Length: 79
Image (cartoon, rainbow, N blue to C red; front, side, top):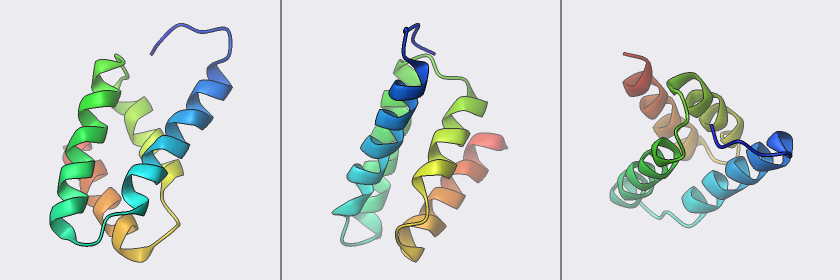
């Protein structure tokens, strides 16, 4: 994870960013594109799989279709 004096604020911002990326997705192909971008960006921040899963879990809850896609992403990460 990125070293920061404000890890809680960073995590909150990451969760908000993930929610924002998924908010405008209209179909599965857009969810796929957004999901891949999210994983790449969070991975580039040197987040562990556990941290990545935690951010994704906290970003769910706004729409059933997005929640299902996040669940698939988490499943792929934890396999």
